Image 1 (spheres, rainbow, N blue to C red):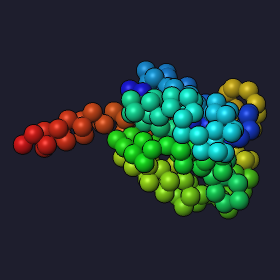
Image 2 (cartoon, helix red, strand yellow; image 1 turned 120 degrees about the vertical axis):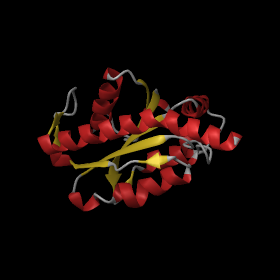
Image 3 (cartoon, rainbow, N blue to C red; image 1 turned 135 degrees about the vertical axis):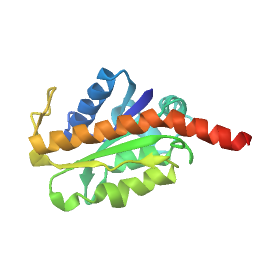
Image 4 (tube, helix red, strand yellow; image 1 turned 120 degrees about the horizontal axis):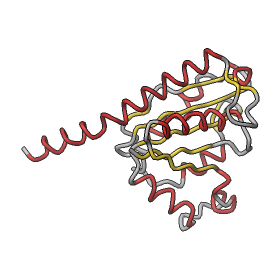
Length: 189
């Protein structure tokens, strides 16, 4: 299995990236190949001026084509996910998440933003034709501390929710080949 991880925070280190790093290591420990991307991997000019010929963008698109899933993290600013992340997602082809399982992660300064995943990020992921967008993990900033080094300090309730979501993500990735085989059988009949 291959998963792309995408850190959507314009700041490094960040709480949302710390959650993503926990997920990356969890998946790697289970034999999943994880290919990591950060917003900082892309030239700001390429994002700002919609450079579809950007070598970094082309590399991400090629990696997504062969991936089984995407784990994506973002901070929440002004009731929505990172604008820099939105700019990057806008440059992806319409079907770039087709046949992919996606696990979104988000952090924010207030629990008042807990629906940002459902009302802001999930519609964008769905428009990119994600096969399945799982229930995301939201954490207010008080639940993540010491995030400048690994491992971050996660409050026990957050850690439990994150590990449960990662387990669900892994199971969803594992059943992808079964779904694809059934679809091939149906198409050949």
